[in-house]
Image: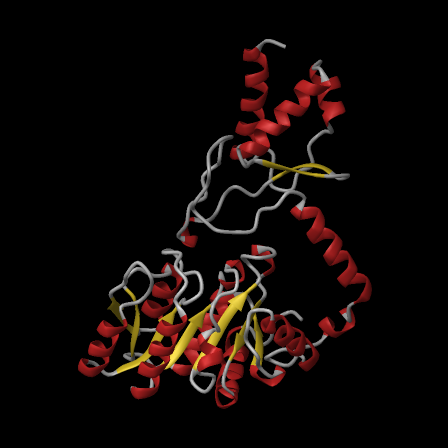
Length: 325
């Protein structure tokens, strides 16, 4: 097949997808059907779909076919996801990407549908999740080095929701919260929406400048500190054990709430104990499954001191009532 005809077929599909003529979820002809319709060799038809998949426009699912992907996001979302061509690495977002991942997820969800208590989802659930679900989450957190009772774990709709619940429940407008000078943008958006004042902590190659944090606490009425000690986003460092002890010491001296963001902690091999393990009486630990299993599932966990749980539960009720078990 002449290259110009092959490329024009790819371009035709791409134009139809981007214009909405082929909406997201549309199942495209099989490779054999495309080859027969267009008079192509089967290997060429497969190449057409491979190029479209490399551009991020379609996804192939073993045994089911090739489907048009969702490529457009509303302007109000505040993010842009361009189509990725072959050979380009998309650094706009971090999400799990493994060969056969969709099939793995499909199998797991099918097993849940066959064995889970689906009838319970016909009714409202406890705000923090059912106790056996929270116990499952607590067992999961133990693999991250955090030993916490099921009653202290709350199920939320992803780590971002966990951060929102924590900041809404435990801080007041006008409170001062310290965070690394370069930090996770989603935290800054939340702080702005909740009218919290974020003061920057200078950063070093290995972690937060804790001497600067001490000076800051002496000059300002800092209420909380937001920290990503295990695999910082975006700087990538893992805070050493002695730095964690130092941070906990500062928090206790100045009565700071510690918000520990552990969204990427699963990627670190044998890291030091979480801050929540070192200072369980004042640390709220937030994590989720978006970076390790599937971004679209929106499953997260918040582990908190027992005294903080009622306020967090009330905020979950106010924001989502309850999250899917």
